[in-house]
Image 1 (cartoon, rainbow, N blue to C red):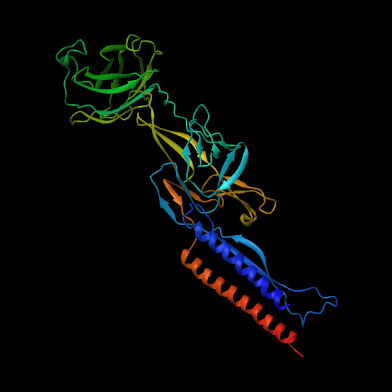
Image 2: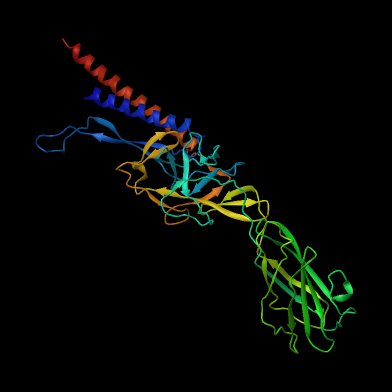
Length: 407
């Protein structure tokens, strides 16, 4: 049995060297997970069931187990590169065939799909026509490069302080072109249904030097609103606004050719009349013009957010991850991907940072988890293991030769 034991040891040492060599060869492979050869002793079956005096007949490879430990995360210059910090795998689709990977090096194909170097599509949740994530069954993620549609302004909010010390204007009839016919003015850009910008000017006119009332007029690109007198503001003795809000007015159709009629709400809630200089404290409106996609980034939760030239952002999709009860049961297909097997169990699909799934880091990749120092030590150990088993065979050969030479 000495020859068989030594031969099994040589095979085991050779297999260990193969595993170590593969680890070393992939020490720079993004998302690679190192493997470990695990061995088991071998005993001949005993008909009597006794085992006290059994001598083993060698060793065998029980399994080559992959080590799904976390690799270092390294920053990259590609915004599409993704690194998983924690558990889980990227879910990839190639013509409907689903595979899993830890390699997050992605790029855009000609159709805007997010793919890896082998053309496999990254999957996740897309967005509906209204920009809401369409959760459910994951599908191929596609970056929509179309312009962001404009949003019509529906409400303008102004918060000002009107100086209680001011008197009525010199000119009693309001005219936007006559600065002596109003006390103060302020402007803000609003947007019609086509995304055209219009300058909305608001004018404040004190109606009486003794009464705490102010008229508010409005123009758009110099043309009067309908009605021109948007509303009147009244204040109590403490300077607080008592007039119900908001007001409403419509831009003239000549200002917005080809666009829908633009009716605005004017909300001046919080406006005051104190004995201090006029001040514009808050000014906002809820519309914007169209915008072109200027870039995008993926958050820790997998949500892909696009940035547009109009300063707005929108959700473009969400990456999903998959995990398994027994990752070691996955079948390694090469090219940094695994496939599901009966031993691995079914995939547990979810969004990053939920359950036992890790978080994503954009513009980064996960390095191979191979420890080169440990692998070189393992290589030396396997070499000595091989030499020792070869010596066992050599010694057994000498013993056999001695028996053959007996007279």
